[in-house]
Image: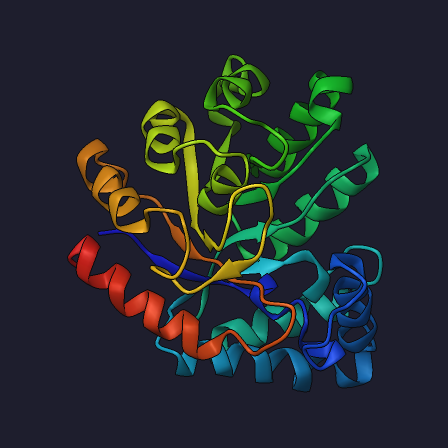
Length: 266
């Protein structure tokens, strides 16, 4: 049975009052500014976790803006561990993009601290300094799950994964981005089945853009994705992802989760 996880990047627009008019970094910058002060961190981080718990989730994919190595001190990390334990949430993965080896090292440290087995996101350093990056991953015993964004086919992702570095490099299959690129998400899951470290289920309203929505309201066949997950025997974490810029995603996520539980037989 797959663990269903809430991806905390769903709240990207929360700290700008769901009026994110300047793109993703507007939300990320505001989120980091809100969560970084140590004196308020436990209260704010714990409140977010309580919301996720109250939605019925037992796992969370923790977005890097909620706990970022640029400012996450040992005290932050300890408070994060305490809050996760208090609310009974496991960390299925850390959602983060690593543009430098320093960031890879930092996010691996955060992942290790909160018990996240994978970092799911982009990592240009994998092609530029593959050996150095893999060495960092192995040192921390954290796996890299490459999340497809610009890639237009599953074959492109397979090329990035290469030999898989003995399982330390795989993929977090983002169905919404496959929809954006006009590629069949169920087909991508099937083609990438030997390297799946996570599946991020996301629906979008139209190809060529990335306006997320509740399952069934968009163009991605999420039910077929769930069917494919069962057919290939994938037993890893399945994250629910929906990052609207103009409204709270909570109700949409709850309805999407209920559909997904039915489709997966959870």
